[in-house]
Length: 147
Ligand SMILES: Nc1ncnc2c1ncn2[C@@H]1O[C@H](COP(=O)(O)OP(=O)(O)O)[C@@H](O)[C@H]1O
Ligand SMILES: [Mg+2]
Image (cartoon, rainbow, N blue to C red):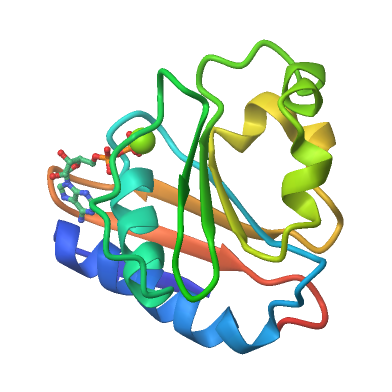
């Protein structure tokens, strides 16, 4: 599915809609994983802000660039990863990635291309392409079973 965005708000709304669509499918011992790719400034963090809103997170979402992961409590917790500075998937496992996968929240990971091996088969894929100053194409691919 491709969503055409012409503003931050559109991109946030796309994230919110995705969270609302998937909320009921999250199991307590199996986090929903959303792998996000797209250049710097594409709108990945904006999309995650929307995800947070859809999950009932009230805290302002900012980029976790310097911490790798931010945790936000909500009706289901949101774990917001930014893998921009990650050197390899192993570093992610050292951070307790396997535990995050089992915590029954939503994992949204920016720069997933930096740890491709870490993502489970049933990962939701979101790629944002910058097509103009304010225009974006948001490509969302749901794994079988979540469609
Ligand atoms: N349609 C759009 N969707 C998302 N962000 C947009 C859009 N148009 C302009 N922007 C701007 O692009 C930047 C996106 O930043 P951010 O969400 O932090 O990107 P990323 O996390 O991919 O690096 C912001 O400055 C935002 O205002
Ligand atoms: Mg970002």
